[in-house]
Image (cartoon, rainbow, N blue to C red; front, side, top):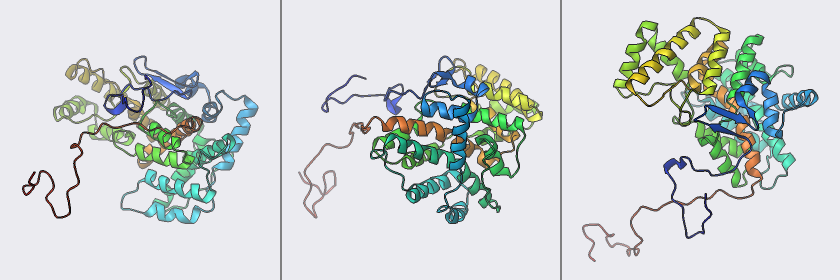
Length: 397
């Protein structure tokens, strides 16, 4: 964008659509090409060939680790996964608050408490090493907190993370209490890698705005979680799976789709704000789901095929395809993750991307401070006490 003086505001599209607000080395999304990458590598290729911890290292350090670095980094993360002792007695109250279980709301509360208990330093005052350690702590402890809240809410004690398990394996263990088989662990790990980062979405931008104020890492992540909680951003892999439940059988697919469109209802798991072709994450997850196999996968692929066909007929030119949510729910279901923990699973991954953006934004040392166009009534004199304001029937000019 062209630099202007304070007296020369720049009008931009509503929602900042296609407005470049920053430069980043973390990654990029090329919607027309159906491609996205982390640093210099294809995110999908990374998901196929590397571990979650290796990709985390890449976003943190800007390069992939060698074998020794990977082992040391995994050990560093293992030490940070355990719940801070100060938080343990407070978790039951957080988990049981409210009539409806909202794990991301509980996570926001827990991370705020951790930041206070551990004395996280505002990024404005912190050196790079401190920022890095704070970012790793927040991201590493997130799955442990979420799993503990889930277990407490369902009447079970939280489990201690195991140092011998990876991030993906620990997540499944902490939720279910069972060590998952390698196929499920790898399927989940590939999902986590594929969803670490995805451009300047609302939550990522929120994290960077808060970071630009100089706040601590946890404050930025909590703000990002708040943005993620909105129904226009957070996604709904559980709702996409609920659609499969509602359809029930292959012969009902077409009628179900036509009825939804006729009533102006959104079909969960289809369409994306950026991609105008197949969502590469959806293609990867479909492949992962097929690798796991089963009736649910066969039904999901049949539903996808029929929905795309009917949408092409009823909405020509729209090019609506399955997005990441559609097969994400299928993969998580097959991995044994309870549906209320689908979106928290996404957060386990995305917190790593947010943290990378926080660290990058912290180096800018400049607050993000846009302007707004005022559209209210023009300034006028303040009426004296007891007199009628302008526009009131008793006002006399």
